[in-house]
Image (cartoon, rainbow, N blue to C red; front, top):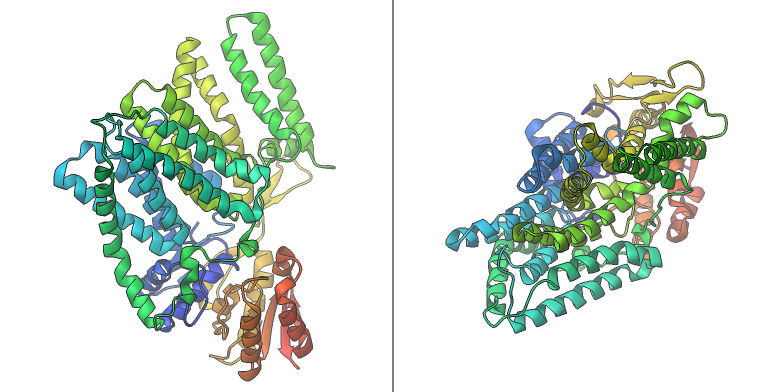
Length: 617
């Protein structure tokens, strides 16, 4: 799929910024960037190394990150579950959450999530290491945390916090968790600080559902980690914990200090441009509210799973089993009835019912996985498994906070990785418990597995539908409800030659970019507003402003004033406005002055679907 589709927003953002790096520009000084800079230089190295289309070169980086993530999740789960179960989290991320090819997302969250998983995998191996080898592993974990920070700042901070908390609450000796009185006080203080800091972080957009969404997993993981640990005179001292932090900090410093010092030096020791490194960002601009299941179809889907379990449970009692089967039919029919759209053919309604019923459900799976891991850790009779689950629930709950402030399914792709690994272990243990308790053998064992996986599987079907948008059309007649959409294999511009895109995209995005290229001189700046920066790359024309994305709130009033001065001084003769992006971001708000400037100084000369090309008066 590496040659399928184009993403004008996010893919365009990183292509445009990579181009600037290759031209010798410096992030934060010469252009605005939302993330720590490592991925920009990885992308630049990839383009330099492969020398082909920058879009394909960036996708190669993303594919490598996906591979590392998948292997890391498998290695993380493999010591505690069978290989067939250990592979489920990787499959879920790559099939149910990843949106390729509808959007490629060459996002720093892919490599940062991959390295986060590898760091936690290395942490889980610490109980089997001793002496110098243990110190080296701690240094490596600290260095990996620093790499995560260099890729995506909030992911690095949350991983570091998870390591600090886990070493205090659980230690790294899976069978010995007693602590001294001093370390117990530190544990309780850390718990209060972490919960209070989380509540403070989400306070600007807090609501009962948001508070519960993030705090319930965190509080549950904290209690499950601290309560079973006993205070003992011979318990683990606070000094041992500080020594572990020292080794972790050494690894972090070796990686982070050189590039931070070099960057600050290049910025003339002005830290203001990198204030986002410590979270000084406008949450209101980035905020996307939690949108859970709508209507009752999700309950029918869940009821279908429960009825299937009931049928297995009472398989030797004909009347009760028949009643459970009837309930399965009722729930299945109600799922179709509740999700069917007016005028939709019956076959199409049947095919899409599971996916439509699961709309919004995936957002709650990580919470269920973490809470399930907490319960499993408290019920486990194996000290090693209990330690694994407690450490995983803590790491899962803290890294899951990277979902904030954009609480949507796109960002779930990266924030849910560790919770899904925890959930796979919980599901395996639950399946084993249920089948043993109910004496389920043969086909019954597989039916229990189907029931436990029914809801996650429905979210997979929904994701497949989303991923196929633009490449598959729905039919209102005929025996087959879907057909392949009309596509075009691009021949130019050179940066996208050989890519296959839907015809609609070729007639809009590609056509607008080709028009801009043919009506401007090489090297002549253009301006794209508000968030379709791939046009810069497709037209091979530079962006004269600091901003690849200019949604409301992305720039301050003074920055907008300077931007308009820049457009006047050059001057910029062509502007491309994306109406679909304007509709997505809503009212102009902070950008009202800029939009008034565009109206006053430019007029429309041609339109390509949602893309309007404006020329200066």
